[in-house]
Amino acid sequence: MFSFSLRRSLALVLCFSIMALASVGLAQEQQAEWMEIVRAAEQLAQQGQPEQALAELQKVFSQTEEFAPAYFVAGMVHASTGDMAKAYENMVQATVHDPSMGMAHRMASQGAGAMGNFDASWEHAIKAHQAGTDMADAFAALSSMAEAPAGLEAAMAAPRVWVGPFDTSNWEATEATAGGSASGRASDAASTARVLSEAAPDIARWGRAAKKAFANSPAFGLVARPEQAKYILQLEVDDMADNTRRRTRGYLKLVDVQSGEEDYRRRVTFSDIGSDGDLIRDFDRILSIMEEWAAEQLR
Image (tube, rainbow, N blue to C red; front, side, top):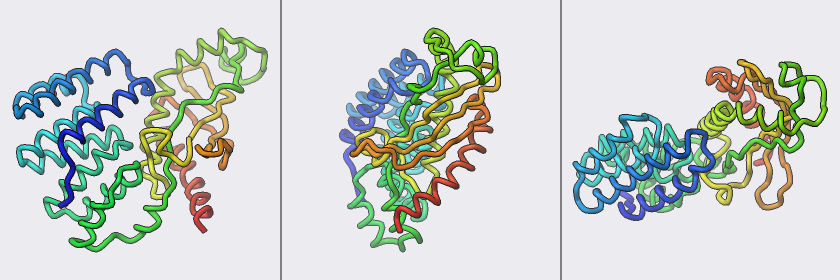
């Protein structure tokens, strides 16, 4: 089966995870502390101390079940001891909490293949490719062991997307919107800053939902960094409710990384970016339209 060195895998994932800390919504100081623990566990793994490495990672898992780098390192530690079932389980968890982590998809593909689960191995290999990871050796190995899934060519050609920050440049919060109304356009920079600051957890929630939606879409690939992408996804906000149900309106756009031009732009409404359930329903509706557009681009 295809392989990848423990040291290089850990180095790449930890590097990219540290780069991503500034763009995620959880408390950055807390994530920095977790990353230090993950780094310590990585050092223990490199020194041939797997049990101590797993014990170190437990310090993260006792505080959160959503930190992808910890699952990745745990998976690598289990792989180094030959426990492929636990290695695969942890790699899958890493991809659940960070679907743009191509290296975790790669290692999940390797683990699934080692256990004879070629459907899962193909699935993760494709996701790794879509996330920008070089999978030429993996596809060659898989092709010699199992039939390729239907739709492989289309999946390989799916445009890669990086989920960017909200574009609020054309939006000015007003005293009217601060009171829950959407009328009025009087400039109020202080009010804009206040609304955006208070909405930060919900904006981060929107970002996580967007990543999951695009990662699960057969028409797009999700990447961790903008330089890997064909498109940057942005929501150009022109209205955001300032109450417990944070309805948000604007234009969802795909900006070509090379040209800077908007290749896709559509008016959208998110009923409440503070609700996971509402975001799932809204993205399901929106992605069905975007997938039709993506299919047209390939014709």
